[in-house]
Length: 392
Image 1 (cartoon, one colour):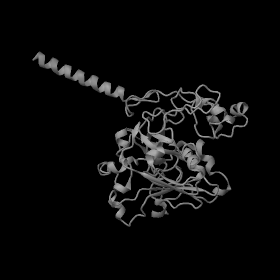
Image 2: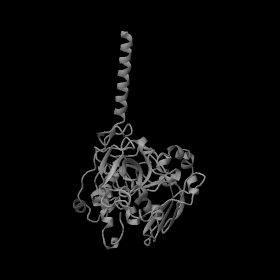
Image 3: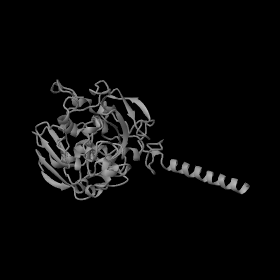
Image 4: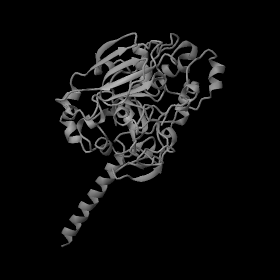
């Protein structure tokens, strides 16, 4: 009767309000509403716009690159910025306004103070690195269960298999640092992470298979790691190697692939501002399929360059042969920069399946040169030394 109808209406109202509340608490990213971001995120003001000539007028001896980052309201804790010649990043590193600081200015009241190091959640978001508001952040559940990690299977639906190794990834993880470095060592990944202040960056990720996602990574600039280990002048490349353990990865028993997985960058690429050591994602530690405890994130290159679960880091004078280059040199190379005008031998790279809420793709969008990061990285590939290189 009437009571049943009223009861049904109340239930429907409750469900509607509950769903609305879930969406409201699940939709904050960069000031734009987005149902695919983690709860509790709040708007992050943009970085201040700064011109290089303004920096040089104020700090004529500053050698930081890019100069436009000096005094833009985000602390660049690396020594190239955080020094007296650059005014301690024009005071940014002595301001706690964004929750990320490392004050070395002896004249500042904050001298000697710095924000917490290591795996800190929530990590402060760097306002320089975001994405188009209409594109938003990809759904966490989709991202963490739809990506390649061939050590655990040749499909992308490998989360259940990878998660069986969670104790392995959360246990001791020695990282061997060797080669042309001043400070060779073997250090546990957690101890390595604890040396650095971590931040959140929102990056586009373009797979060579012509699909793409947007991920809020947590980690630290690769350049800070290079400063820590010391790069000898003769070093030209950095070689990364992932784990090799057939008890964890039965696929590694196969001789069909050249295990372990290897990747590499030039030293110049590794020092670029975008090159990032990932230690978390979505403001938490990475799931096994994402490649914990540390991985590489280089958003201007195809995704296979962003090696997961790094166990060895070696600086060398010789160009490393990366995994997919060795497997199929006719299809993959060392550089693997994103370029919509250079097709894969078996498919077009002009467009990409943009994944936000479903692996089927929410839209089909044009691919951008260097995945949209041309202003930050194009200079790396200028000059006569790049003549004849297959950069794509």
